[in-house]
Length: 432
Image 1 (tube, rainbow, N blue to C red):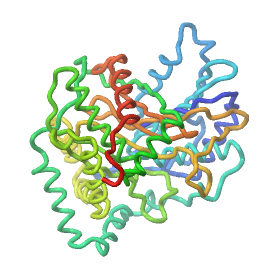
Image 2 (cartoon, rainbow, N blue to C red; image 1 turned 120 degrees about the vertical axis):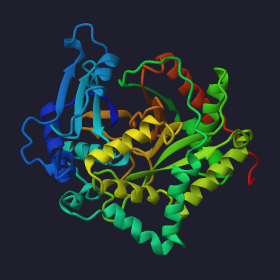
Image 3 (cartoon, rainbow, N blue to C red; image 1 turned 90 degrees about the vertical axis):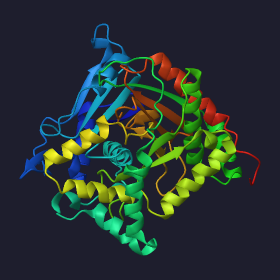
């Protein structure tokens, strides 16, 4: 269960200086220097003070005979992270030639979610540039040293804002695990049937002009850009399956939600929950109607704090011994009943100007960051996940997928279809 971030750079990077910047970021965020330990059948994180050796690896394509960028990236992404023996992230500086390189991060999802991973990357780059901002300063992560569960306390604090709060939390859980369990969600058509858990990566961009037009459509329909991204995902899954002779009944999208308790928004950890949004064929027939439904469901979930119901569920599960928790997880995954059709993450602006919602382009030393892509974990039996972010006014859409299920050609086709669906989405008449 790993997430990753890839920074494409123009220029050169000093590995010694980069390693020092990584160590500085680890000192600011102790979760990123922890090992997973077990005591009395329960798990806890042990903070490692001795950071000799570091996590940075350096490779030069010119010195690797016959190696390609794609092959090196594939091998790095598929090196498993054993958080019992090593830190929960790795960094690779991959030099393509004298003027180009990539900085590739992999993170174990148990330690950090996608948004906080980007905060950590930002802290590293600011340390490299000797310009650490106040926004990135972080005190010691109390979650590592305290027996309290801040996410649970934050969830409890929402009671005064939602009428019949605990009744609704129980109702959402009952609906998620009982009523909404059947019929099983539609699966995305794939052209292979292998069993390997290796992942690969493919990405493409929507340029600033096209992104501005999409934003204008969203504004005219009184919705958010994310609503169009979600609605387009529902429709493209249905179109994709139809192209390959497969019917789509209920499509269920897993959409991560940023919880961020007050006081912990700049702390690097895992603070994400998710929503499972469903549609049926009649909902997807009219794109404008689908967009309104997605918007209404998203607003309703936010107002009623629906994502917090899973905080209670996982807290309840954590009270059991580790063996029981593992059994629960395997049951949820193997039965496929509770796994959604597809996972889509919208990171928003992956780099913004300090104190502003405007996008920014930044450097790391003398190198310019040309593009940023990333992705979340690939969950069985989805087979692939979609990650979306905006950098330098470009909308980056990337997929992490299992080649055992999807060929690279099929992933390219799917991503092209999704990008076209986003660009040409019909939002309906203004004000409808």
